[in-house]
Image (cartoon, rainbow, N blue to C red; front, side):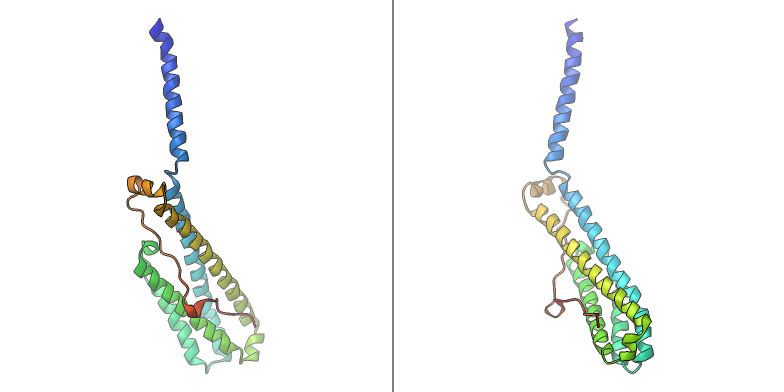
Length: 203
């Protein structure tokens, strides 16, 4: 009779211990590393999406400029070549943890930003082009995209900061050693001295 009356107590005690263990594990940060990693990956996807959006606008922009400023061939060629280099680059799956690949990606996008900046400066000399409705629309879309790129990069930088900090501080450092030994710090954007600002696209 005594054994029967203690059975519910044991079950209740086990449930309490399991509940307490689950609460402690959930509150101790065991899931922080994968959570922050996924947030950083999502932020990186947004960076890629916005750069792709910009690349998609460029062919129409070049064609529109070519119609009114055909003799600016060098500038137009620079933009087309920079776009080709940026879009044809093979982006490895580990780009966010691969310093060399990340640097190449950043350089290719920087070259494209620089070429676009030169193109938009040249446009200043063509009043007819600045009045062209197609160009005005494309210029507005490009300006919006440059702003989105800046926001996506800022969000990525912040997500990577949080993730890398978690890997390097306690208790994240301990959880990495115990549970996530393959977790590597992610690469972050750096600004080249000549590219502190996005190209100015308003006239």
